[in-house]
Amino acid sequence: MTDLTSLTLADAREGLTQKSFTALELTDAYLAAMERARVLNAYVLETPDRARAQARAADGAIARGEAGPLAGIPLGVKDLFATQGVRTTACSKILGDFTPPYESTVTSQLWRDGAVMLGKLNNDEFAMGSSNETSAFGPVINPWRREGSEADLVPGGSSGGSASAVAANLCLGATGTDTGGSIRQPAAFTGIVGVKPTYGRCSRWGIVAFASSLDQAGPFARTVRDSAILMRAMAGHDPKDTTSVDLPVPDFEAAVGRSVKGMKIGIPKEYRLDGMSERIEALWAEGADWLRAAGAELVEVSLPHTKYALPAYYVVAPAEASSNLARYDGVRYGARVNGRNIAEMYENTRAEGFGPEVRRRIMIGTYVLSAGYYDAYYLRAQKVRTLIKKDFEDVFAQGVHAILTPATPSAAFGIGEKGQADPVEMYLNDIFTVTVNMAGLPGIAVPAGKDGQGLPLGLQLIGRPFDEETLFALGEVVEQAAGTFTPAKWWA
Image (cartoon, rainbow, N blue to C red):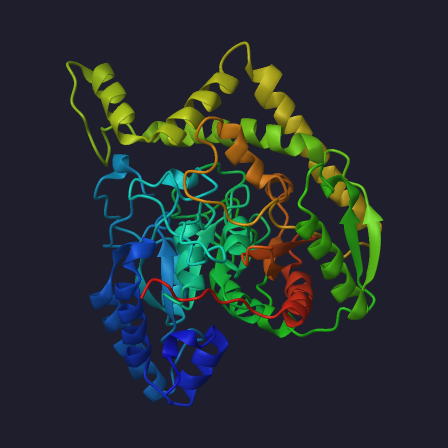
């Protein structure tokens, strides 16, 4: 029998339907793979008992002809999603052993459709990071290595555990969250597909908040089709989330393979950065050629406020984080460090519980919201955000269906290589992705090639609001031209 963990999600679904293997056999294959790959530190909590129970239930549903669309499919869950009865920490010491008494909407919909939970996946603390080095559980290791090197590389962040696990065949798919690129950047660094849906397409209820006006849940998978299958289960209106949009959920999988002939694809001139790697520049041009060969029309477009996106994002996101993280005070839940009085208890708890990057962002956020600075920073950043959104609206008004850009300014870098002396160096990793969150648009990262050291590189497609179907159709064109990418298995 083929190694069950090497199947795509679509192939595994077909095998389960045909009864070529059972959901329990598939789950056991993944649990064994996880055990052999603990050096990657992708999972912060494995849930084998729950996984096997869900797999047996899926086998029963399949036997009765009552199987849901994801029956028996083993998935990993980013540790930002509340899972009822299963520890959820946002990879921060301040949440301790917090075990939610409720389930996030997104994960509840995955279990409703029959999926199996393998465990909770590592992420940057409170999703604040671009390399998965800020987690209280330690950094995640990228399953890819530079040719001829044994140096450990980052998988990207904040959803680094999700990306690493999918790329290393430790789950068939995973949930992620994207606030400024936290799905698309790690997907590009690990050679897999990552989708950031339109803001409001997936419920944020039950997801630990970072920046509420920017956060959006989305799927990781090995192929465009697999990500479309997961997205259908994850999306949908939720009355518990006031930002959730009441729109019907399309059959995203049906869009995969759809013709892109006659579509107009924009190439934004502002994304041609000084010092951009020649390989990324060449890959971008190659991606445009693939879409042109499939019948799309390529046009140059302008997004003039792009240069302000990163500084505006790093005002808006920390401001919202400062507000959202005020609830972690040692009183209501999570860790508590005692003091001589309540003020000292607050200080001690937050100083001990939050890591350096989270403390930095809280301080930045509190500063930009403070009296005397609110207008100069936060209000101005919100005005810039409106201009960024209008840039995209103007381009789409010209009949452009989607925009093609690089996903990241480089391939994966080594652990400890960036941001040690200057945090801004790390923030620059989000340069191609933050505009999408600021404008609330959908984006997809698809693996498209490799750099000179054999590391994967991705291309990003940005779509019109609630038009993820076009992104899946275009992403499939890139995937068919570029092929899929699998790291050499050095860890088992």
